[in-house]
Length: 175
Image 1: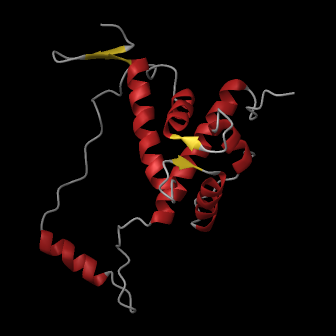
Image 2: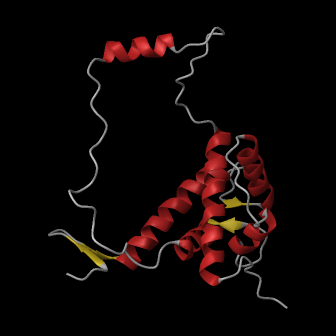
């Protein structure tokens, strides 16, 4: 078995195919989170809205990449919208080029979280975490804006990886 493939008795997949499938899944999820008008494509306005959501949620990181730069990198055919195919190709290009190097950690993966001892104890903690206005501080529902912000941050991180791998943050090849 080569390092660039994963095998089982049921199937074999090489790393390139795996990377493509993961990019497709990420693009599909991002499209759901960012395509606020539901037309199946991303506009510059939708990316700007996601950027604003990231900034207002406090999840924004400083970057030399602008929304315009990101949109240019995503919209490879220049038609003014980003399709799922373009988004997937971008995410695949930004993904690592090979499997992780080195041996897996000694002893295998870290242990998972301990199981809840008592569900009623858990609900008591939730009740005690409620604030005076009746809202709970243990709310785990993610808002549309939070999903948009997270998807935008993933795109910006991918853009930064591409910039670092090419030695430049610009993807414009026109002169």
